[in-house]
Length: 539
Image 1 (cartoon, rainbow, N blue to C red):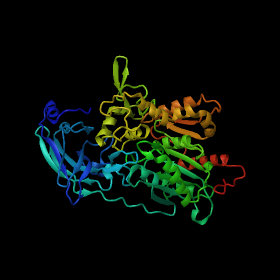
Image 2 (image 1 turned 90 degrees about the vertical axis):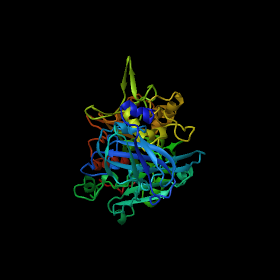
Image 3 (image 1 turned 120 degrees about the horizontal axis):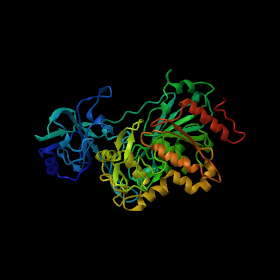
Image 4 (image 1 turned 90 degrees about the horizontal axis):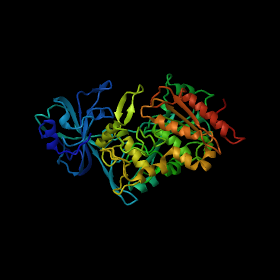
């Protein structure tokens, strides 16, 4: 648990010396400065991880090695910012709790950018460099060479660490005959954020695309930031999709993955948000038209289908539900919470604390994630404190913060108004915050509220797959959505739901990607206007 203790008080309570401190600086050769951002210290026992040598900055994660963070403002070259026993850490709560021993230590400076938004707010965020909001690998961030050193909090230490290395720009991936990429500055998002914001796409082409003049249906595959080939496509004999994709009797699609990182996260959730900006409008008014301008796409709703998993699963559902006249069907896998009665274990409508459940005389920790066998992986408190070490004011680049940014209302300071306190777990006393989430982005509630007009447009369009042992309990929201859809009238449409017994995150059904594309092709054939010639597939 994060505690608001002074260095001396914390050290005394643990029986350690008070002077336990790293002093981080950077030289003018790394950056002219001054810099504003967040500094980190990472500590690991070994550089060997995941089968090879990895720096400490590359070993952090939800269940990774200890690291500690502190915000700083206008730090000049040669100046120092300290991380000591009072600064929050995860999974070890304080530097004073690191057992005496030999460790590899590394520091990193995550550089923030000043944004003058169109809503009048000025905030500091990490400006994505097309890495997908991962501060450990973001170009322009400064870091030190890992050093092996002996740490003993009982004896105390004051260690200087210099971040004299700069993460280089990411080299673009070259196009191939099968895969093309593009990137452009978004006018809508640039206006909102007051700085250039970019959108992009990676496009998988069908067989003989360059030899024909045909137009093709498009699968928009949603997910976390990636510039890799869609659907794991690779021109190799052991790649199932490639083997089927190149056959003459396989449906010929354009498969498109979007890149839309935000200053909060690697992905915008493809909707308009008061905190993140008009990404929904930008995708529909700028990105999709750009795809259809550059590539021979059938520019009709029935020829645009959606799919995606986890974050992408939520987006694939949201785009179909919020824009039923633009898309002709969705395949959503393990979608993020589609009903906010369960947001990775937290009921934002009824819980008094996001970290605990009150059960009669007892108070039990809320579980955030689990193994398939039910064993606890992480509690809600641990998960949120992990994010808080990554960044304050929702700047962690992590999952719960982006939900709060996308789903929540705007706060007075220009950052989002949180639905609960990330230090204590106490739910926001203002019921309007949870109500805002519900009215704008609770997908099950959106169906219920708008069914008389929305229902007729969604019949035969919703396909949802989830493991019944989903590691993040996302199956719970899906069950609530299905239960409600069973009650629908005028029209009665129950949707198509598939649950994988003892399957975790992210279950996509028993079919492989090639089989799923055939199903989508059959769906498009069944819903295209009478008299339409389907030259793109003749099964």
